[in-house]
Length: 360
Image 1 (spheres, rainbow, N blue to C red):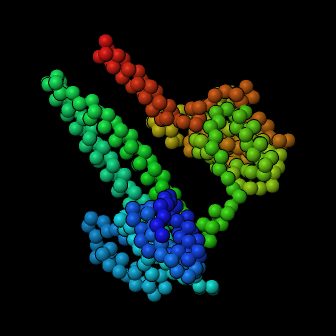
Image 2 (tube, rainbow, N blue to C red):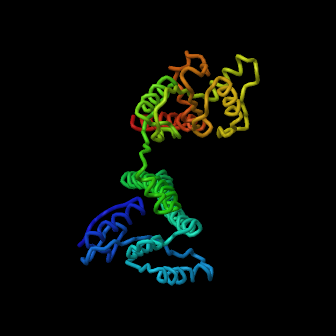
């Protein structure tokens, strides 16, 4: 039987193949990482594992022999090679043993060694995409220069091709980077740890919130459902399932901290050398201010914002309520992000003007 299936998680892929084995279908071949071939047999409780064995350009003697040594060790533990794909991902299988060791990577060191291989592989692929993208861009520039001397030299189709290729490269590079990060994190876990994580009642919510009032309202609604905030990114909020309690939330930023410093006639936090927004002196002061008013630290969004939680009856307002509805976008994207957005807008306007002048 042949099946097409695409996975971005090796753990889920192995779990799927184990479920197939319970139905009597055993992995025989795999091509391009998504075309599976199974052969029929007696249903069994099988375990599957995946590893990589691609050598670097200049392998050492230890690296050359590593695959052979690993294969011998796996064979002694009862693991057999089922197949491997074109990317040299090797699939091993073993019948489940009650009370036995049913993990090929059953210690932290071996899990780290395997997990490190996948980011390295994806990083090399990303570098290849960037290299060929740069080659096409340089060819495009050369053709444009050539066109200045030869008016008949007009290849708009090539410009479109370069643009589409660069967009595809960016999308693939972003997907590869996120996949590599996800694979490394899941492979560092033992099977039981990963299964516990999958069965967790924790959840992630995608939401873009700019105001303190909106953040407080959103987090209090989630808490009423029994979910407590543990972490945050620009667009995602991470929750754990816990018993609900009557809590309120607030968000602080460098701008708001400096407002308080000004009111106290203290020195503002402004480091002229901190072009990337990495100096967190303001966060230290923010923590002092928040704790003095009864707030407790929940999480921080890099060096841009800090979220605090406290009992509704036990906390004092950290900032003036008039700022609760103010748009704090800069606290989310940071000064560097704001600079990139402004530069992009200016570049777009200049490009539009130049195109319009050429058209008229």
